[in-house]
Amino acid sequence: MIREWRKQRKYLIKADKGKKTLRSYAPKWPKLEEYVKNWIIYHRKNGIAVSTKMILTEGRRLTIEMSITDFAGTTSWYERFVKRDGLCMRIKGTIAQKLPREYERKIIEFHKYVIKMRKKRCFEI
Image (cartoon, rainbow, N blue to C red; front, side):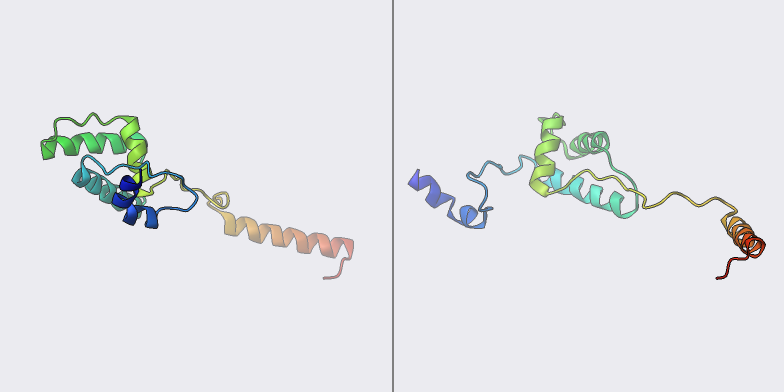
């Protein structure tokens, strides 16, 4: 084991201290994964949501272009790819509800109603 550790010295030094082993392997198709990662980043920057199926489809499409024959494009490949590159599936969320179309008019009507009720009930500001 000491020989193996010596071979892995530079990786062990860079490794996360919480992990006990080096279980991630180098990708079998590094160029393919690089293209897929760039594709994901490009689409995310343009505000397009990228799903798992889209990534697998793009990977399969690229393998045809790159003449790779032994690529299956399975979910297990996807999971390892995401873990290797530190990607995560994320969903764009909203902070609040959408405002109605005529929200300015409704706000003005609400303010008028409050002023009217304040005068009617003799409330001071």
